[in-house]
Image 1 (tube, rainbow, N blue to C red):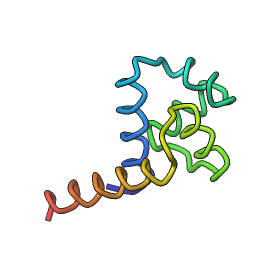
Image 2: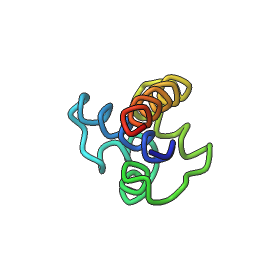
Image 3: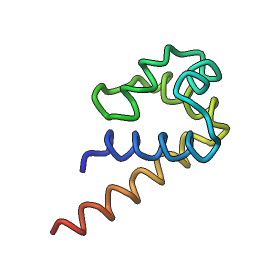
Image 4: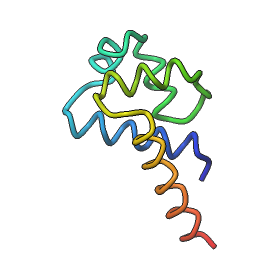
Length: 81
């Protein structure tokens, strides 16, 4: 699993825990909902400023989201070895 995909899964999980729609998160982050969709699906790399906006919208530090994504990536990759 690529880090960008793992990051998207982490963002989706955090958004769903907070019972937010993609549109609601996008509004909180000052983004278009399609940007949130692309990030969650890992289909388009995002700029650091966009990732920071997502983390602000979620109320979770960017470093925490990245740590979670790295842990997920490591876990998924070790299961496929």
